[in-house]
Amino acid sequence: MKLPEPIPITVLAEYINAELIGDTDIKATGLNEIHKVEPGDITFSDLPKYFQKSLSSKATVIILNEEVPCPPNKAILIHPDPFQAYDSLVKRFRPSSPLTAAISDTAEIGEGTIIEPNVVIGHEVKIGKNCHIQANAYIGSFTEIGDNVIIQAGAIVASDAFYCKKYPTHYQKWTTGGRVVIENDVEIGAGCTINRGVSGDTFIGEGTKFDCLIHIGHDAVIGKHCLFAAQVGVGGNTIIEDEVVLYGQVGVAQNLRIGKGAIVMAKSGVSKNLEGGKAYFGYPASEAKDKYKELAALRLLPQIVKEKIPDTPYEAF
Image: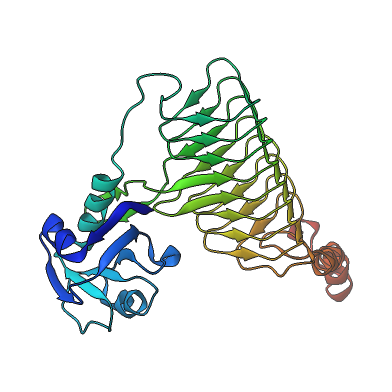
């Protein structure tokens, strides 16, 4: 999430009532979770075991709840609850603004784009040329859509990120400040849901095609020319490289990477990183050729046991 303009670190410290340590001449240019940070960004950590990861990241401003040595050319803001401080900055610089019309007057819609009845388009949305947005679709605020994109009926693009901070007595929802970015020639099937990034972008690459009823979690990055069949689910912050095929009902956990050209067969569950250029099957998903050998061996197991232990009752199987 980029700030509307660079903000001096001294002003930020005043905004959140924090103690400032380090370089006082810094100007922040964005806010991001640790896995998305760029130079100029603000991030936070409230657990000492993650302090060093934050301090050594590309982030320029780090909100912490304990005083620690500050690296050169960075600033630390000390606050008793870094999450609340960070969340308050998201709310301040990207406040939620309810729609008062079906299509916001701040939306930009390109030449030749068709908008069918009952489509809702949020604030600061940009839609390119020759797109087709079918009836009852929802395009949330700050979304960017390229040219020649089809979004089928009832799809929801840019719903809030499902991301919560755990406290001893409750969960608190993070304020969603990120976007959805969809490149040219993408098709989003009917009833799909694509979450916004928490403070970064959820990204759908050029030429990718989604069947119906697919869910893409916050901050996921989907490469170019991918093909996803119905009921695929992709967890937050997962990276799927170019030309990946996911067949129906594949589930992909969060924070993973699937390599270019991988194929994952129907109903498989992906719980770890997968190399590109291979076919996978099963739960947990592993190379299909190995999984089929395992299944073949499993079918032989009753006969093997019967031969080794002739008196084994049928009910044992």
